[in-house]
Length: 319
Length: 203
Image (cartoon, rainbow over all chains, first blue to last red; front, side):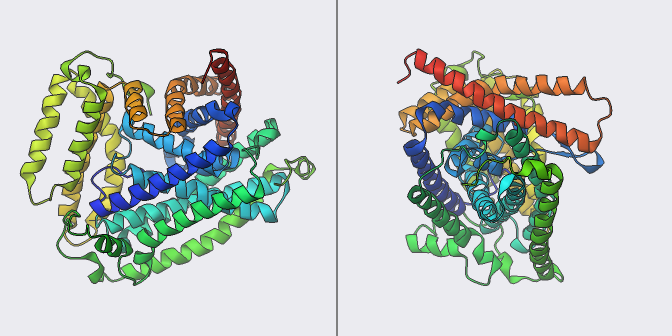
């Protein structure tokens, strides 16, 4: 899902850059205020861990393989703000050392894979965790959240590409969403297995992630919530509905619309209809809705099969 | 991902390598911005950027085959997204422009990362007031990336020499075991590093 340079136009680069800078700055401030000094090295080590874990390939059907992304995994193990910092560090190193993901697209990549992936994933994780306690709840919540976060990040990525005029939303949305609904299954399974493994060996490491006081957590949730909502409203919502392009409106209001790069093709994409394309978007949306229910059920089965009843009580306490 | 391909040539000696890191960083980002903002109707601009990158690449004395290898590694990622652009009116033109832009940007970044040690990049970041927590995280990450990658390699070898029939379910479970073990070892290592940092008078 790393967007290379050349795929985003100027206004999208500016908008995602602002969102990512705001999000990363907020996360750094949260972590800086709360992280005990003895855990500062852990941030760097966790980033190296995510990078190393991403190098391991898991066998998927037919000789292909996939690898972990690790947003929800890190958020569950270290907390959402720390996860944003850790994954941003991973993306920055990948961009500068490996040219994996572009420099100008770094803002978009940080927004999708560090902020949306970990923060939205963590929100879903906490919501499910509130309903299901114990070790089974932990496995269920992290698997389900990992799947949702992967799909959400892919949808954000599609929104940015479509806002740039590189690909048409009606073509890219079904393709990206469907592929990532499959990829998300792998991510969910790995995340759940790894978290179950850590919880079994060192239960105190799971959910230790600097437990904040209640008031502080609201600040964290509110800050990230506003940021993610803003990103979705600017980049994704205009395509999903018939509203005018939100990003273009903001660009016009700020007066730098004319400075934005020329669109690659003169004709706007929104005004044509290919037979069956509109229905593909709807079919994908339906598949997503049904998929969410199915994945939740699968995650529940996974939790039951991974955690025997007797071990369920020996779980880390609910926070 | 092979780690020895990361910034393999960053410690060579050449006119480009001797330039200050800040200059190279600004020049590389400038080239990328120019490539992204150039209108598609002006191929001369792309040729100019390509010429600049080519001159720098020759001056840097990095073997040309290395660029080819790295580009080939990264190409599938770009192609995967660019292919979606074909399925729209005028799609082939978008596809061609996007691929030219992306490859120019990739070459620029490969050149940057192989002529500039990462420590120098971090020093530049520090000077432009990037929050110290982020710089520390990046520095520690770069330092221990190779250590942890070796550790993964050792654990993988140990598993491979003990499991004889790699069924998919077993493979997933043992790989997940490796990852969770790696996380535990990383946290333990972080504690040792903290003690060592304190012993050396950190901050």
